[in-house]
Image (cartoon, rainbow, N blue to C red; front, top):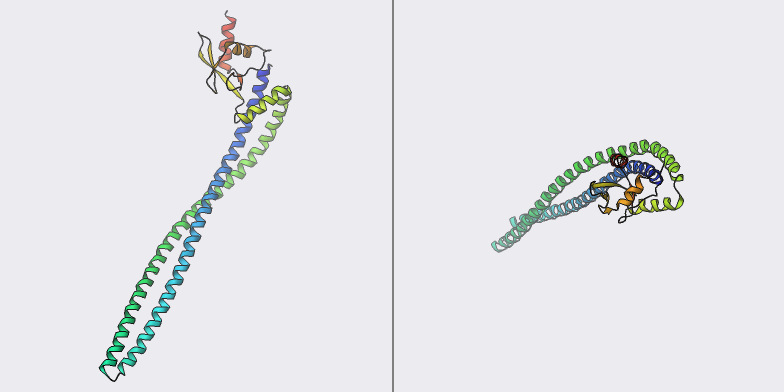
Length: 254
């Protein structure tokens, strides 16, 4: 087995590992997103609830104030009915009318607060429905996350054993370069060679699309050839089975 083949075996195992880990990571991201949305909804609900309580307290105070004015008006009416002169009567009447106007204003303000409470309660009910929906989604995502973690665990363990075996087949220096590429290239340490024009012998890196010298392609065909890398992105190169078969057939026909 050539060094490229050994690297490719390791790369295939790493891609399987990455796919399994991505499945778990996706569910973790979904769960985090659902929780963030729930936190936002609950924060908004708490703010509306606090405003509703404060508005209700204000409305209660206004109702109490209006009741106090009504008591004053009742007493003034008693005094007015006992007035001895028209002047006294008119004075009481003026004061009563002033208090009635004040009371009407307070009651109007109180009604406005009560209307606002109804609006707030409607918004809270809407948020409660959204929160319930998000809680359901969160529970489903959490269940999927736990399932994926459970299912992935055994597969990851087996793949990790296979990876260790593959890794031991690769010299330390090349292995270190491969590991660096895994990190730098977001898991894509290798790239498949793409045939652009067979007649002109033009080939390119499947990752960065830069042209590859024909000498590098020839190295990949050799059973004892070195590990070849893209001159541009530095990924290790490999030949797909179809292209390898076509190139080997072409080589044999010469």
